[in-house]
Length: 272
Image (cartoon, rainbow, N blue to C red; front, side, top):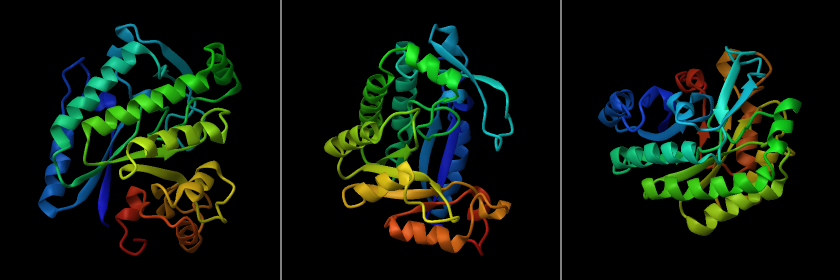
């Protein structure tokens, strides 16, 4: 392994506005520093947004967990509306504080471009028919989301001036490829040496060509840093991930610079 991906829910580190507690990250980073292991830092808003945001008046978006692979399948949850001013004020502040604490660490090589998320660091948003109707009622959500991504591309890049700024690609509602290309083109125009795109749906079931995120990787592979994340773990068995050999072929076809494995696979010497 050449690095470790740290995935932290926002509510895990900030329960009171303006008073983040980075002790859990510090303990992990201390271990990584002792062994000289590089790391990526990813902070998840979405359903991991702390409650005080809504208590301050931020607009929430109520939905349900529809992914059967999630332990909280069926639960009612809420995320902040990505362009809400109160949400952005608080999320921007914690990004800046993270940068003050970790951007000078040479082992911190990447941060994830989070800002408009659901359950993970990917670009997903709630998308049931009821969810889509609520998004549509808010007006031109595509234009609003593009503005959000442009703003936070700059905010993450400012807070972490030496790190890669990594966008975890995935389909957002019914937005066309031009939306994602707009986000990527903006990132490459501002930070051509640091902007990175990542496919988080890598499988070993078949050739992944035809999936939005994989096709974007192939389109931009000569212009953007890029890599892959397994959609599931080989160690879990079943058909969701498929074979190691086919997954490797998909990485090779996409000329991937790196491959993020799930924890169980990363800890398995044979798989690695």
